[in-house]
Amino acid sequence: MKKKYSIGIDIGGTNTKFGIVNSKGKILIQSRILTNESDTIHDFIDLLFEKLTPMIRKIAPISQFNGIGIGAPNGNYYTGNIEHAANLKWKGIIPFAYMVAEKFNLQTKLTNDANAAAMGEMAYGCAKGMKHFITITLGTGVGSGIVIDGRIVLGHDGFAGELGHVVIRQGGRLHPGTGIRGSLESYASATGVSETAKELLHQNPKTKSLLRVYLRKGTINSQIVYDCALKGDKIAKEVFKMTGQILGEALANFIMFSSPEAIILFGGLTKAGDLLMNPTKKAMEENLIQVFKNKTTLMFSQMKEADAAILGASALV
View 1 (cartoon, one colour):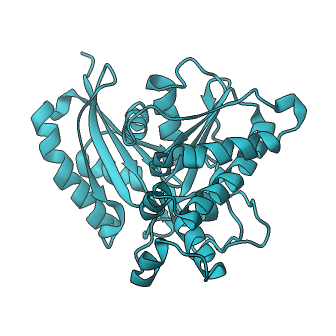
View 2 (cartoon, rainbow, N blue to C red; view 1 turned 90 degrees about the vertical axis):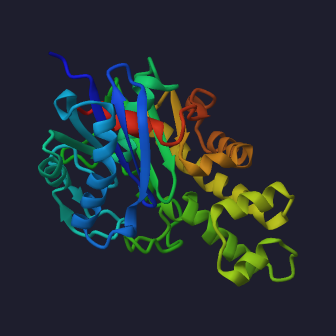
View 3 (cartoon, rainbow, N blue to C red; view 1 turned 180 degrees about the vertical axis):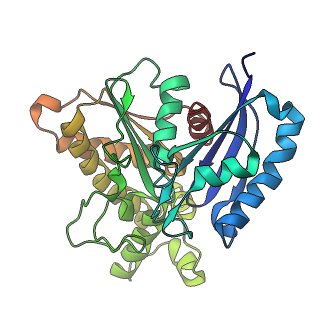
């Protein structure tokens, strides 16, 4: 008898979201925990088990579940390991799928978190029917899922498509997790937005800005920058202009690599809307050679922030 349910888990740099999905691709129940609140990987899995178990019992007997699919930073589809993830506190190589399978007594598969989001978009979102597209997740970090000829690009070792770590500013801002300077993630992530705001405030000491109050308190984040930009704050608006410029330049490079039908932006930073979209699209088109201009649609995901990754992860099983 065909089993009716699967579990999807999306591990992000800040939050881990999880849900139970039925055979029609509907999330029946979901929740979240803070990713780095647990000191050890064992504590994290114990907390997942504690939160998920009552959800499972509420929906159906465990015998009705296909298994658990997981999207994680630096998740390797081939091995089921999380390997040297820059934005997680658990370092090294972690046999995460194996550990979860043992804890829950369910088959478990794992892939890169942005690949899971791409799978969700392809199965249920605005990429349905597309065979060539790229998803870019703009959250605590910058992830990517590349689809060519209808298949996720994994590479020979399972790590293809780490576009967030492509160097876009030679000798630029240091990424503390990787030690690399000038990577896209250092600028186009939520963390990057707050760092750009701090830099602009220091570089323009005489410019009035609502952000200075938050700088003194040490509480600047991407949401605060967005809120200030909506109020017309000059520096906050410049932050999104700069972020979009850098992101657009990077997207132009990605287009000239794989000629996608669409690039789908996903994640918390997309809540900035046109403040981010307009400068990104402008810079993207300006940095394409003629044969690629005006051929790739740049869009925001229409799925709820957690849904694409949960659905995509659940599709693994």
